[in-house]
Image (cartoon, rainbow, N blue to C red; front, side):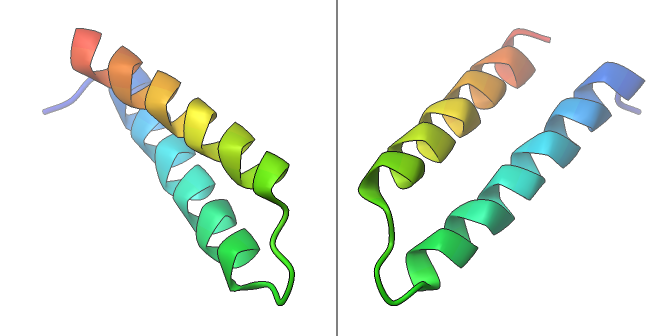
Length: 51
């Protein structure tokens, strides 16, 4: 069983993934927004790995 903290991180990561897919599906996706979301996802992934 995972700690509540890790579960919260995974939930946030999934939310970012949904935002990323939505942004990428737009007719004119914003590269800056995509970079920012990917950076946030990576930070969360690294934090999850440390837990």
